[in-house]
Image 1 (cartoon, rainbow, N blue to C red):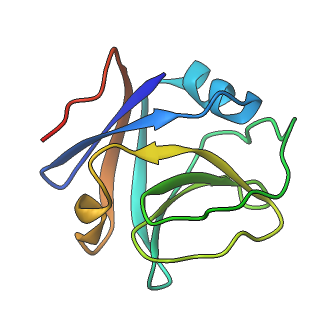
Image 2: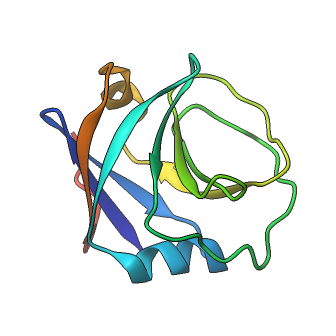
Length: 121
């Protein structure tokens, strides 16, 4: 399952994990959201409803470029800097081209849609 993200002249894809939360997100697409900076290492976008937390739990090998869901707040978290797992964080997938598009600062309209395969630059 692949997603396409478009905001502020940035256009990139992510490959989803095979877990219940990722499948739930996939079932909601397409979505028009707002993406904004949070802390110094991530961008966040609030979903119109919470995703299932079925099968969630601790994960390791956290990495720049991870696409996650933060269940307590109901938002996507796209990491452009190092982070550590915290309770309520569910990894949904990975950005295919790395985290560089996330370095654009500010709040922007974000389009999230399904694509048949990632486009690599």
